[in-house]
Image 1 (cartoon, one colour):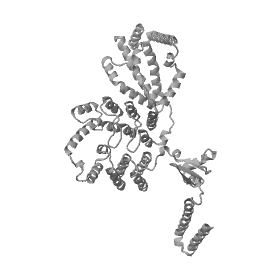
Image 2: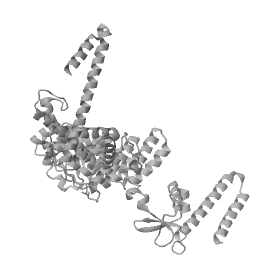
Image 3: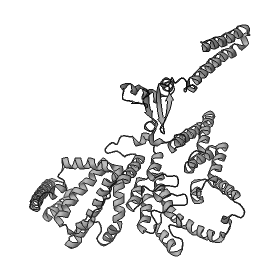
Image 4: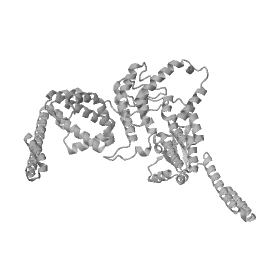
Length: 555
């Protein structure tokens, strides 16, 4: 009642004031009525929320880090479409009781993916950057100023790596306040100079260097022994420039000539951040870098690759022994880094056979599987004991499997194939130099050499399938089911006793020979038919007729 009297008296006072005022101030008085009404409503709601100790009118609660927070669903639903949809689903009666209070209880960890604070995560920053670029392009100053305020709020909360794109946007859009704030933030950080030079404009980098020098005391150890540091810095920069130019041969020469190693230059970290995936694989093949080495900021190469979100690089590092459970100084794993950089929308996007999967989801899936996978090992020495018929049989199956994988799951198949080819490149290069394409049939080559080529081809296919099973198990399950339904699995021939296996293989070879004979017979008949019809053709087709006749004779 007190509240209603206060409200009526306030409105009566305003009404009398309007009736006694002049007509020139009518609009101002109407605005005053709205302000008074809104202030009164706001005060009433504030009292409702602040008196929860004595009068708890909350009708639900959200649990945040084990602490229940009372909420009013009607208020949240009116202000947020997300909560409107959420509370609408709650009518089914499947919500948990909040610790015997009888109120519906919601877990914040279920509402917000990865327990991410969305006022400073990378997807939120990227979204604001897209809006500010668009607003600046369309010369909408009000929106530019609005989003500049959002980004100013991000700068002190976000990781320094996520401040870099804000700084670049501020410099591009000429937002002096935001630019100055970002420069101060980056200058105070421990981000290395080489990475900053790689990502920032020259004039901005110069200012950051100047601020860092000013912050150093005169007697700082960094000011001592300048000459050796400069010499090492020159060698390191040459090594990194070789990576920028994708020249691994030059990299080898520089390593031979200099006392600086790949680890001294953190060259593998740099390659994982900026180089092409094939260059990263070539550097890994050198075997000169410590895959578990941490840079001064506590990042392993896998952490750096997780920020880049390239599935090919992640798979290559994991195959070489990178540890997915290794943490940064602040306790982040490669998986948690990748999750924070991935939008929930992209991760939950439905996978469609034959279309590219989102690479962010691929990266998260790869790292999740690696965190909980069981150790896998395949004895490749078994390949040397297989007969030519066994090799052909396995090749038929594996080549079909890889072909279907490329058709159904292009992105996943490409990653698996690239990593398998990276392992087999030296072998293929040697054979190619001697005999050309490994798939070509040379009648002059020895049976042993031909078998060796088949073994190498089979080894590459097996590695491709292994990569698929290791990093993309769901895709592999789809392929398993499809191949079981559509064609005989080669592993079926290996089941049963030795006698049963021999019988199955013999029957399989008979069927294959019959199919090949029928195929060659059809080809020969087609060639004869073409040859006969060509007898009535013009002189211009005589050359083709001779060629067909030659093919028939060869059959």
